[in-house]
Image 1 (tube, rainbow over the protein chains, first blue to last red):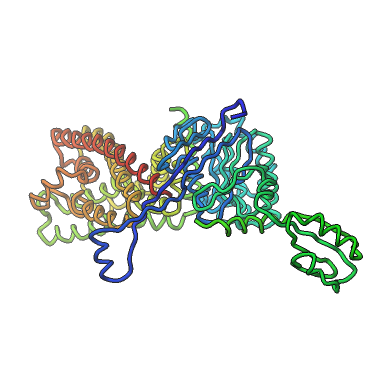
Image 2 (spheres, each protein chain N blue to C red; image 1 turned 120 degrees about the vertical axis):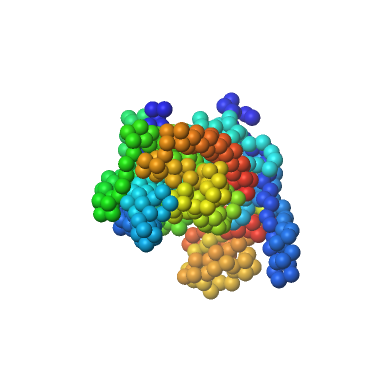
Length: 329
Length: 267
């Protein structure tokens, strides 16, 4: 380790294998199943290692079933690893020591911890008692969270009457009242509209700044990751695919650049310059091999009446899609 | 300890807020709590009257007293935790509970006690009205009234421990309702809920003695009714103490094993 502080999260060769009993179809097989169940081992996390430095916000990416949630559950102490090392804030999570639990939170976009039928403020008060938050600290944290997330009008409405986005804001606030130094966010913006996504995103950044909290975030929205995380960890089929800067992920997995050229019209045939992705109202998008970018740009400028020209990396969404598609188990 | 007290106070407020939301279902629940013993009361009164005014050592007015007290004892020691747990595991709520720095049993105890306190006044009023209407005979010695307080408390604790432990079956199976059904049938027959145990065949009484059900319902009822000698009361208290110990040890073992399974297979 280069940093002097011990890492907030340390995992090494972490594995989680689920034993799943299989049910075969057919009456005969069903009868056999009564006597003896066939079970198979499914590795959900298959030997991953990474460290998180204190105060880092890291994006944890992978397609559905990649092992993200399983990893988060091992890090928060809900799951016992099958093998490997795991330390969070110096604790072994699955022991669920009380001092450890007081310093972490797990917010899941698809699960609710708030009491459904009563206003969120009651759940907040319950968390105050559970985490033994001193009254003055509770009051100031609640005020801060209320301001940042604009909770004021929501606190006294029964949770079941809140919209999805409003409820998510309350869920996040409930999870952060005890000011955890380690925050696990599993799809915190799932199902939310763009405005709400943006608000939650800026809130996460703000919380990280203000409290120096370490944040590990999974999301299917690349905008979340681009806005919040310099570093990303990508897993697929339970294995580590990439760990590093978002920009070097782009470097590593793209062999193409996108050139957007604005011409007077669409008539010119640009096939000889590269693959034409689209051509709308004189705005042509070309995909060209990375090594030939400079040369193609030069030729375009020389040959055609170019009004404007832009060289870009392909959108991160497309990139991630390709990364997952390439990697076969 | 002070922090736990704070948690209990807060849970009380939360439960009260939730109950306020559920006024209609609360009322239906209370009607159920009253109706069941009332049905048995009417049936046994009819049986007793047609048998010349008594069955065994119970007169018609004794039956009235028995089932009115039973209604209160059952209300006091009742839990709904077994239904709750299945739902929690299915909805992933247990995961949140496991990530809290407090054992989840505390919230359940606080929730149970809170809702009991809130419904108790109404239940007492109903009991008094029923006792008057059916001319219930309840004639305990002063010592029995005094002894009833710790006995009732023990009945609550023992039943809570056992049912909380049984609810943990949800860690292993998603079909908890079959277990619940079996438990409730045993409870119905062996606790004295359907009839005073002394009226049941001798082998059934022996079975009831060695199982916990009687000690959480029938025993407190008979004590307050004035049917027990001091020696019998002491024996009952001893049985309760034994089941408290067993319940506590079982809960710890099953909880440990259950959370281990849960953390192996995932939430």
